[in-house]
Length: 196
Image 1 (cartoon, rainbow, N blue to C red):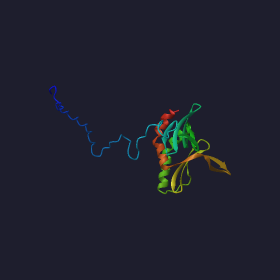
Image 2 (tube, rainbow, N blue to C red):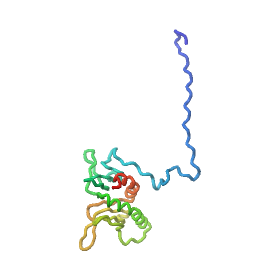
Image 3 (spheres, rainbow, N blue to C red):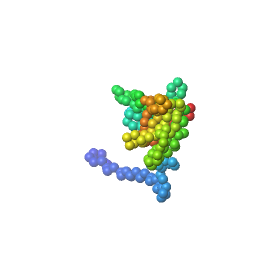
Image 4 (tube, helix red, strand yellow):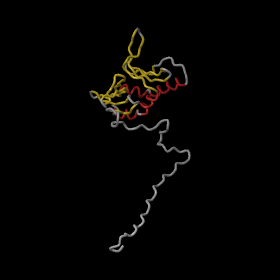
């Protein structure tokens, strides 16, 4: 352009960016998900150590107020399944719940298949003679039963009265969906426990 001219030359055209490469389509019938991952079995997510509502040692949220955690007490690992309550913007552990020492978590983990089979049997309306699936330690039991029309998985302490084992206050009853969240995160729980 010339000095004293009021118009500048038109800018040179800028080439458009190359389009992003399109991933190759998977062959017909092939899954795009990693091996072992499906809609029925999505991959576990990383432990939630940050974010709104997360608590210390949290592996996953089972509901708005329920958490699965791994904690350390006196050098031993514990898997917690507990309800929390919010006070002044901080989530605090409530009374409802249970902390399983690593040994009891290992026993429960080994029985996941049996618990899932009991859930399937109840869904198929097969007769169940005893709700207890397994015993964890001396006084703790894992039960699968129907409560108000829903399958519930109980992990709680029992006490003896007049020769019968009765459920105590210490423990938690999980819905089928909450149980599935715990089992989907079993590898992360195990890793957080360090295979103690």
